[in-house]
Length: 190
Image 1 (cartoon, one colour):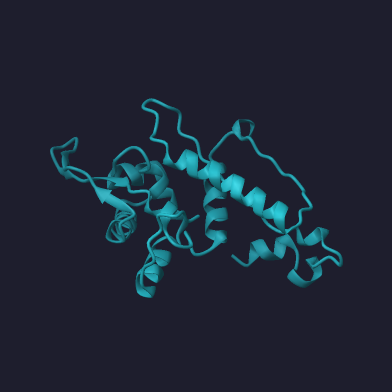
Image 2 (spheres, helix red, strand yellow; image 1 turned 120 degrees about the vertical axis):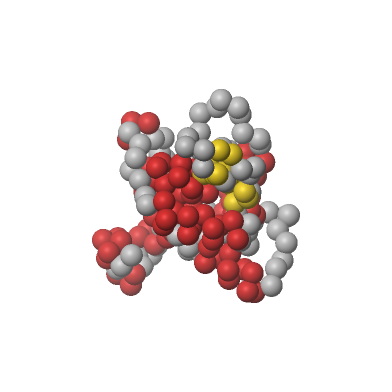
């Protein structure tokens, strides 16, 4: 989601940023480094991935300004390690991740690691006119902006928030579901 601080940039920059955010692994790396600097080795261990693979993604995110290197520190065996911290640029990037599908897939990867009883989920069907939709979107955006702007609470519990607002094509008259296919077909396309 964009805010008023978004700077209009040239097309190659926007495209390069969109490509950098078009990966569930990269979005998960950004989340891990949101309020705690982490080294490539630490990120790889948390994600259960090969450090060389993770390093490629970390470098891409750092090159595009989504991660910033912190002061070098010494590792367990005296090796030089560079921790990275998320800059918050993904929140301010024009268009954010290039596909809501990336956000959904990232959410599904992350929530699969959580005990289902620890997830607060809400599903609500509404019927709104244009003014009601605009009001809902504006109020939700204000809540998201407020919490995104708050500094992390030292020692606080980390939470993730996923939200999706979409037209309910199955409730439209006539239903559009036949035109778009089933949810099973949509999920198998990815």
